[in-house]
Length: 185
Length: 144
Image 1 (cartoon, rainbow over the protein chains, first blue to last red):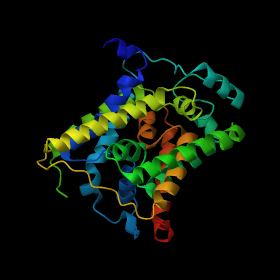
Image 2 (cartoon, each protein chain N blue to C red; image 1 turned 180 degrees about the vertical axis):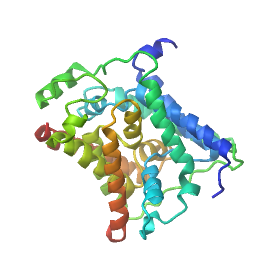
Image 3 (cartoon, rainbow over the protein chains, first blue to last red; image 1 turned 90 degrees about the vertical axis):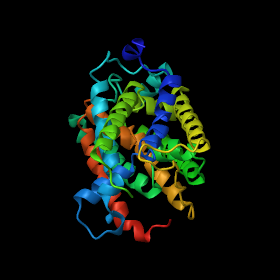
Image 4 (cartoon, rainbow over the protein chains, first blue to last red; image 1 turned 60 degrees about the horizontal axis):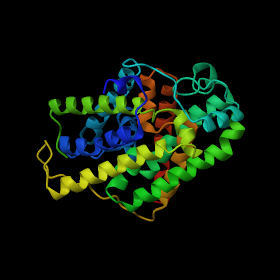
């Protein structure tokens, strides 16, 4: 148990733990686990507008989720300060692939050569962070869910829309990985 | 929808903290792990996603079978998503997938990463909000 704080968690512990948040939220308040709707709630809260998509009672529909999301941020903070911090032990094949793509610093949780204030104003930083973020926001709003809402909750509830969405997730992810990143990095 | 007593909000806060903690310790938030996944160079991420879905599916089936009520007193049920033409799921999903590979993060991890000490991800969050907002504007003319 203590070892879990100093090592990366094996998939058969991480996966079921993640899955348990579905029943946890259902039991807590009949809430469906799904993070991306928070982006909509934040828009509804901070952008006064006549846009139909944002005209609803975001406090009533989403306050629980926004609080949950705040927790996610805090939990990330806690995890990065509790237990030992170590580099991500990706496979040697991936290390080789990433080196070929032009990444030299494979330390940390995300490559500093892309995700740092310095890199933000390089092409790879702008595309990865700004364009990437935009695609996440637009795509999840259009699809009505992300990996939590569709891949986990949706598939667990045996929903065809979510299966289609997950195929989309992987199509897009593979396309970006094989056709964009090699030119970007 | 019923409004939420403040005590319940604390529960969601703690669940969120636990989730952010798990996401980070399991390295699901790592761009490196997402690349490893999309290059099919490790079973790990597929094991995580697959076992998460299996656990959730089993739990949902149990909750429904036992007709469990939530702490808020409601019989647990999950509204089913409307299929429509299916286009929104295929197109929206693909667009999100592009962003997922580029940022190495989906919405939850975007926030966890800020907590994890990568503050530049706030820019990604702002950009994601812009993306959501543009979708809202374009929604009347997009196929669903």
